[in-house]
Image (tube, rainbow, N blue to C red; front, side, top):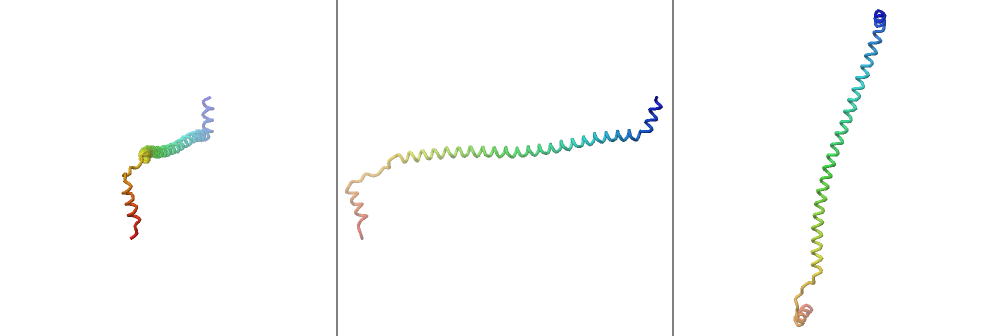
Length: 112
């Protein structure tokens, strides 16, 4: 029985060796493909992380600008309210007598 096995092995050793080499190459190629695909995915993830970091920085800058604009708006509203209150007040005028008003009018209308 052992004799038969050795004879068949001697006959087909090239085919067996080729089959084992074929299986080994399939496994190694598969590992290489997985590594490459993993590397590509890692690169994409890194690019996405960088992009999100940039966008987060922009978002923070927009938030800062938004708060600054809100503060400016509050200041402007206060200024508007102050001017409205000033407009509501009647302007103070000097009380003149009728004779002083007459002199003023005559002085402006005299022809030289």
